[in-house]
Length: 229
Image 1 (cartoon, helix red, strand yellow):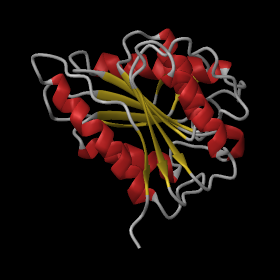
Image 2: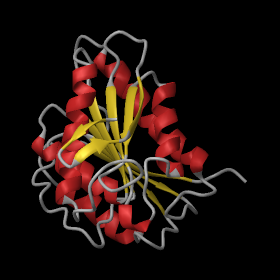
Image 3: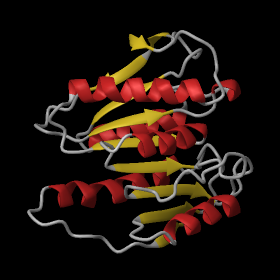
Image 4: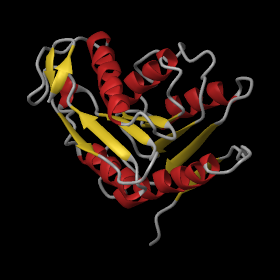
């Protein structure tokens, strides 16, 4: 539990034993539709990043679980995320980089947060709700990132997410990658391994790049993951 703008915020935190390990904040889906930090996608992301030796914090937005307050339609949740990032940075002052990852509603909050916090170096947006939320504030998107989307998502249509990606990809100096996971629905019920692999494939070379004396830019690409039969 740590102090937030509406009272206490409940979280789960893993501190990496690696010196100067990267640190990441993970944001859960919509509070009014059952979203919590224990959502299976969020739980899976949390442990995937731990396996890559990140320090990782996931938490409940206001009014969820033991977190105080009530749902605030995004404005208060953004404040919660900013407070959680402050807490993460206070416990990882020597982190090699700071990341933010969000799923669905959490992706919308994550993208707003990175526009307000130049200390964020990278993002991953999983099923960003481009069909129902405005992402025009990303003009331009200031940091590299990855968008992951399921092809059979009935809640967030893939076409809306591809449209978001293409708009970002057209921006000057954009460094955004897009991965679609074939057959995956919104919660990646039968494709959780593919989701983890997509995150790992993006994270691993980025961590290596941070250790190089000279920054090397990766080729941007759009690709699809098809599960093996």
